[in-house]
Amino acid sequence: MALVTLEEAKRQLDIETTAHDVELQVYVDALAAVIEGHVGVVEPREVTDTITGSGPALAVLHPPLLAVTALAGGIGGVIDYPAETLTVDGPAGIVGRLDGSDFPAGRYTVTYTAGRPTVPPTIKLAALILLQHLWRTQYGASRGLGGIGGGDDYSVTEPVAGWGYAIPNRVLQLLEPFKRPPGVA
Image (cartoon, rainbow, N blue to C red; front, side):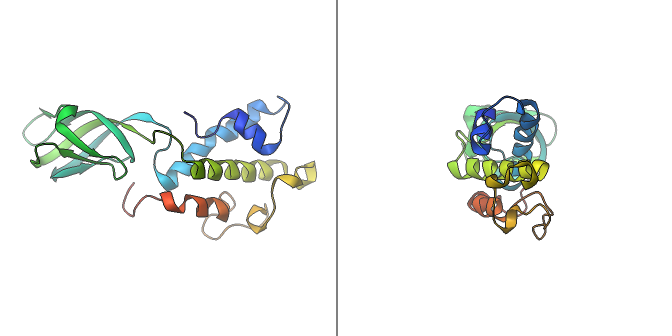
């Protein structure tokens, strides 16, 4: 599953040739880091984190969480916690023990699948609008692409407060319902 495919990008930009495919793919590839910086992991991928914690739950560093494949660690050595003995609060990125016991204090290595099972349409739309904006900054209206934007937050000469020139307000507004809570890295 891709956040945005090359074909989707070309449809968004009304590009019908392959002349810009290589350059456009660079833009497509750059979208995930920007979008995920606001909403957490979108495209599912395996992640291994080393975290320090204790108590009834451990928080992974790259939510949302789809599944835990391995968890080991704790005080006094390595304790393995088989995946089937764990509970997962996916959206929050929280791992607990099925038996309700606490994790002892210590460092843990957790391997898990982060991301979403599907890309929510609103996140995909935000990514396509961001792509459109970034592509316009590359080519501008002077090259006949004036029809792919519009509105103050598409201006390539005026920054969006706090974000410089990269992220239009409409993208931030679309991502707002999916924002990570404060304190989540």
